[in-house]
Length: 112
Picture 1 (cartoon, one colour):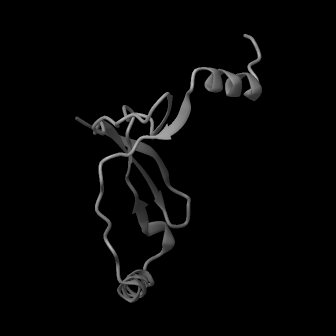
Picture 2 (cartoon, one colour):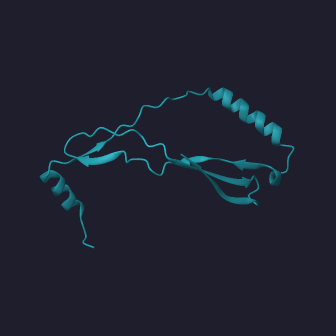
């Protein structure tokens, strides 16, 4: 495999009038949360769980893995319009106890 330096890539882009562009995705909505309300809720939850042993407190978080998502940057001679975002995803969810003694392999939920 040949070594390709940044100088080579820079000259190639200059020769063919190529530039890096960020492709803008669909506009999303932003929800502004009240910081005081969040802090009160955290204190309330801590008060509810203080009577339990940490080995009996579990946390399950889920996060999306968009495996078919298009890249957000490209190299082109002129700006490129973005394609509609692909929504194909896997939801990955790890589960563990608060003391860290119990850990499950992440569960995977397939979504079409």
